Length: 564
Image 1 (cartoon, one colour):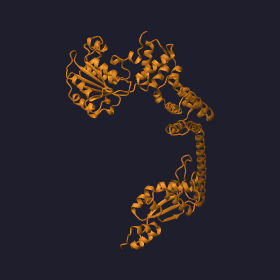
Image 2 (cartoon, rainbow, N blue to C red):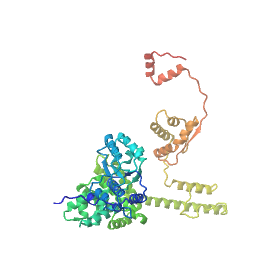
Image 3 (cartoon, rainbow, N blue to C red):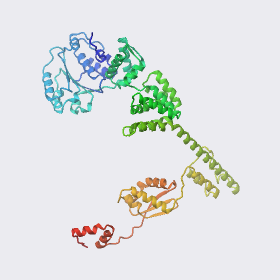
């Protein structure tokens, strides 16, 4: 029985052209080799499983190849390439810094650097997971990296670049490896499936690629797992989602249809079915948010390419996006986003998700109610405008004035000007026009009646929310003048005036909400400062003692005497 070799090793790239998804790096390295512009130290950075160590080995083999191809690739047939492929090359050294991270390990490597290669042109040192070196090891390596011999080339690889000290980074040519795209991974898996005579569904391979999150090694591991699970040299979509424990797209399409139809009961049943299959509520929430995002992407034809799904699934997204309004999608994403943030801190997580589903199921109803309310306000304003125009016409006829004296206020009833423009337009309007203007201003505005006592009580509530002995409390405790809906504070200094101006909007909003009146205004005036009356120390102590009785007891215990 032959030993099984995992796909990640069996199909490991042997040349730059076979590296998947890192063309910007492989092209640069091939050009450097062909033009003899090789740096003496390279730093390969990027997430796991994207080809850092593989590219380091290909670079090491290609540098020492005795018969490069015209494309800048290793021939694979010369003595140097053969020795490398048989793990017998004397010019290439690999060090795993995760387990060899001490000063002694680096000093041993530095000792080897002193000796030139016996065969070939270069000695290449590959240090994997270089960020695991200790600070002492980094410092021991620094001198050699700064002035290496002409025949030595160092290739460092790391998943955590920020842990590599800056003095090391500054001496390296840095290459940033990207996460591999879903399409690239899926295409590579399809090639392997063909080579292994495995019947694989395209959607299943794409699902594996998405689950790998940009790491080809992870994708190959999952590929091997599902092939073993299937046991019939076939990879189906159903088997893939079952084995990888992935929630099927179909659930998200069904629950979105239920939410748009305001079918709360069905959405709860679908969510319950998801939980019964062993999926976590948080996983469902994150997936639903991604689903809504995909629907939003489908609203614009230019962004459909952002969907990393198969053509069949993309068509389903396009079809559902036509029935989902932009308002629904944005509101639903906001609700699901809050559910995601608050999920872990919730005591009853299932109820937390169900409440979010309930809110989303009523989004369309809320949008329709808001639209009807807006239409009602628009109709009222149009009726008021029509009445105002009629009053203006009647007044013009009565006074026999020309149109130049009193212009018609509105030429189009659709474009309603602001109230200030209306008042400015009419010079000294008669009483009936004033009444109509008041009616227009009342539309959509709260004008609950209030008294001076109501204002004082509201101010006291506001004072309690302020920090004690702050400038805000001084202002709110100062004298006020109240005239109709205008509250004027009498302030005694310019510094307090600055504080008032900074807080006026907040205070006004508070009073309007408490008193249910949107016409309240606040302003401040500098009060005349009364000449300060000098008070003796004895009088001050008497006042404070009256206010704070414990002060007298404290004075007696400490034996304090007054000094005027």
